[in-house]
Length: 94
Image (cartoon, rainbow, N blue to C red; front, side, top):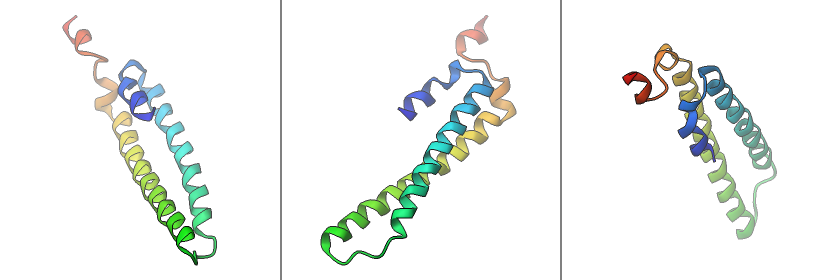
């Protein structure tokens, strides 16, 4: 869903594009906080719990990477180049 929303950012005004990424950031930050709270629980002692920890760590690292990408994307849509660029190639031809 996030990739599709990103693909269609060109249809939005720059302020709306920034707001979209800010909502994404808030959502994923909340997810990360929940996952980190689970990580803070006592360590696993059996294979089932250890497997859960492996999956949990994968979720944390994936979420951290997503948040890093969102920070980069926000820089892009905040840039003067984004604000001044035409919405599509057709609008350049007019």
